[in-house]
Length: 281
Length: 318
Image (cartoon, rainbow over the protein chains, first blue to last red):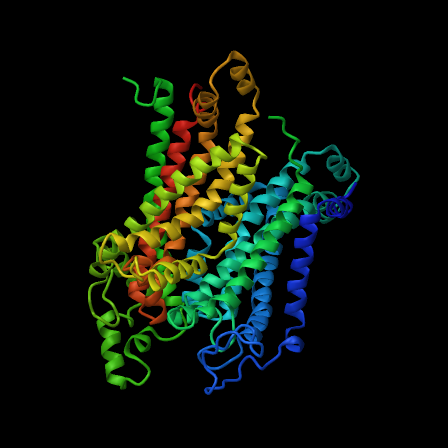
């Protein structure tokens, strides 16, 4: 039974997982339709209405420039979803391609790549990201590139491991014997085995990438104002904690929900792939 | 007299330690090279960057002379390398203080923060992880799992800001930041430690569950060994191997997280220095800070490798 069918089966039974999957899709929907559903212009300043606590008109209040926080949170959803997904997908694509290739051909290329991978894995994500931002300057693209680069090594490792085990299978040997080219073998035999673990790992990567991206923006190294981003909004909120603590609610809750939903979905997918055996005590 | 519990193991482990120690030297040199490249990849004339956009031409020229930017690249590289190896990391662009004098006190502060946060995380994760595994699938386990899940999904800066809000603003029992007393340590350490603890609890739990499902545990129980002994003497010892690796990785995480914590709590540490230097384009300080951080990660990595080999009973006889 292939992975997609397993996933559908699983979500049919696992109500909790299903709820989070729907939540995650809802967040992406918000991100896609942000421009249409925002109640106010997120960039419009109204200096007569600064620091309004949450009211019916402004459910999440207004910030230090009088901008509606809810609209900014919605736009920030689009920004964060875009940054995180781009970084994860780029890292995944490059890492998997690299891992598959070197896992299959082996030799000097493999040694060099794996050595580089090991070295990169010594340093946590944030350090690598900081280095990239130092070179490229704080910006949205800087963050995407930084995070994508720091996520290449785990995917290289994963896809190489799977490739190594599949490479020894009899059907691969047979395929080569009848004259399949390298590309054909990779596409028809190696890839189907890799796709599921990679997708699962990608889904598990997403929450960490969102947190990293928000941390970078929080530090001022990421998305620059006036473009709203959850971490960046929290950075601004920290200066007004005494007087306007409600500024924490919008971006804080949004971040929490996104991370929670993607974590739960990732867990559910992982369990579908590697079911934990029913354990007796 | 055997050091590591067996003459054969001694040789293997000693060889490992020496080879890893030797690895540090080329790693360090590579790092310094990398940092040099960093400074020169950054677009823009370095002399102009130092002088500022509006400086008159002769000032820029003078800076170029003084820093040696007009010399060929290999010469600059050698000068930089030799300087670093002698402990001269240059001076700050703004304060003209030697970078080393800025960094050293900060390192101690960050080390203190990271150390206590890690202690907190290890104690909490070991205890709650084991309890969770022992009472697998009961109410206690589920509660712990939910709490650690919330901990994982809450960004550090959110929990940090919430902590400041409740304990400093509302209750006034703890300072909002800085490093003035031992009370200043509490919030940053707990915030930083809690995140790591949440992550580690989950992993300790699954490692212990795996360990407790092994056959030798069933045997021990059948023999009538007390449950606590079973868990802590038998299962934990065997789970120690992956747990140590996790703690090692966790320390790297903690150092990374310290950067954010130091910003929230205005902690006078290396992380905050680094961020500020990046934002003010004070490149010598950024280089110095990155150098120290990177070396720390390499050293931690080495220690974890050696510890792992030490605890692993399979590494012994040839």
